[in-house]
Length: 85
Length: 506
Picture 1 (cartoon, one colour):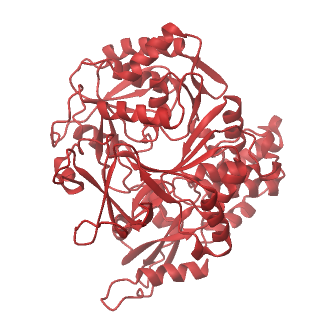
Picture 2 (picture 1 turned 90 degrees about the vertical axis):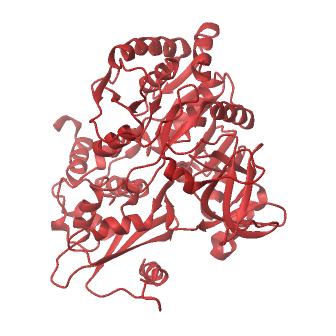
Picture 3 (picture 1 turned 60 degrees about the horizontal axis):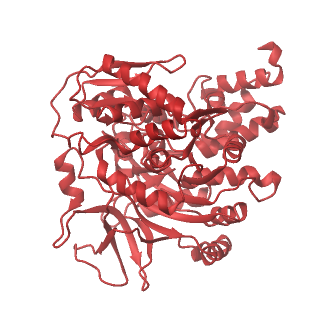
């Protein structure tokens, strides 16, 4: 995951249409702020899975992994290369 | 004081059938013997931590086997427990604890979560009323309000015993049977999932909070532990049935009873559930914390056919019937002038159940919602739900008579969300509407007017709301405008138009 821009763009396009991707802070709590609810979480997980080619059946999942842009980034890095984390 | 029924059941099973399963938690199996031992250990800790035996104690815990043992230990000692949501902020917990007359807040210490610890309640004004004594009630739940301080609902011991008898009989809960516990411990659903099941010697499969959206995990847990009964808001069934698409429509589980509760069921979801669980009996169950379960509908093939037709033409689907009163439950419909409606018609539903509370801890709140009726031994609870009664007596939900909606199973007051939004310094006016949503049932949308020179955006508002409201009250979408709102002829914001505009835009 070289840049969080595609992720931020997807979040903004889908859930926060009145802001620009650069206004979305890395550590904003997406769940506590109500941006991602339980059903949107499924869409988010599915998008991350497709975009970063992570087979979700094989990776332990917790909502905490998707709590913020920073958390998702860490999750993707870990899932792509467990040794690097 | 009489022995608590759940505690008596756990000690008896620990003696008679010690290796039988009390709880599942992930891969872990906890036998009745182990649960009993854990409960005894925690009883000693409680005596040390809570010397003040006569005051209720506030308990904030996530759902784990130790949390269940901790509550059993407290019930066994005749201690009254206030069980607020684990997600509430400290200030709200403190205020609830004060109102219930608690002097301490008990929790499981971080780390492995096996050690109990207590902190003090900051003194404040004295509680508004004497709660019922421990001989009458050991458990105080709270309502799921959108803002402010939730109302405290004492669960009467005798009422819970009657509920246990009904639920165990209705859903075949017994030793050797397993019930899924999906809802958090502080939800009224746990009165069935956890406390009824343990009271009759069955097994409870506890879903850890951090796995609650993992469909693969949930399906595996249900099948591995041979769950026969799942009771949940529609969202869980959506999660399970959508996960199974890749493996064919039929879910790889052997449920006997699937109980949908807490929210209306969308047409497509009902069709999916029927396909996914061809062998299960399906139900729509209606109740609230104040009265516990009140009405039950066994879902028929005709309901599913009507839902299938409703997928093509939304006007056809009126929602599932609420069904008929449970044994001992009495219902009344009243019109807008408070007059009884006989026969078919539409009005507010009032219920009186054998499972109901004696009233909120605050008698001022009780007087507003619990109304005595001539000739009835117990008061009736005003549900706030507008309901239609058909000629055959079947009841169907039409909506709320106030600004309340259910968001993912949580009762939410739109006007309270508006009031909190309006407190933001850059908000001139705010209107919150509930938009029907094929996935979620309803989603909240906020229309907010800001001053022309303001740069207010939705993130600012989300931050403002998340400090003051539970997550379910935070709108899914915001429209922020510098223009005045569309108004009705009486000058009020035109909520219908606002909702429709949003609907068209998508």
